[in-house]
Amino acid sequence: MAVVFGVFFVGHSFPVTNQFFDQADPTHWVLDVGSKITQQISDLKDVSLFLAQPNVLEPHLALGLYVKAGSSDWLYRGFVSSAHPSEVMPLQWPGIVASGLVGTSPAQIGVSVEPLNEVSLKEGSRIAAKEDFAKRVALNLYHFMSSFETQQAGNQVVVPANCFERWFTKFQEKFRRDPDFLTRTDST
Image 1: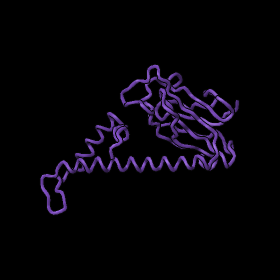
Image 2: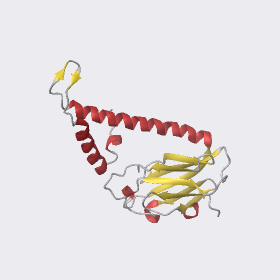
Image 3: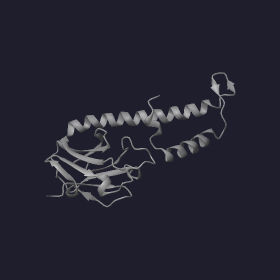
Image 4: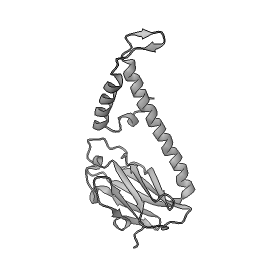
């Protein structure tokens, strides 16, 4: 089998080529991350997908990368193509909390050959998700600043001079404990 693509888990693995994946059919590959990389799936935050050589894909095709944990559905994370031969993508394992072990639940990476126009549509959804994340961060800051609403000057809330520093310190601590705390809740 020829080397077509590879992945590496940033900070946790060497390149893993498609030869280490199970090939489901001519256009789909699956890697059991729990058995081949680590059982501590929550440590794996980012993955890089890359094409192994130039022109391995026709210009109208792309490789889409998906993740699956436990009984979740496959979730799209990004793509590469001949014009865009490598990318680092956040994994954001579905249903895995920051401190949890996968245990007997399988965690998998899937790679699929797809028409470039189809993955381009999925990219639009991924960008919308990033916009939603930014909105949630801003809302978190707004709620933090609103907690200082002890003095008002007309339509303005007076906050301490170090408000942003205090919020960012609190945000970083919470984010390090649980990187998915903003996206897990649907309240916006």
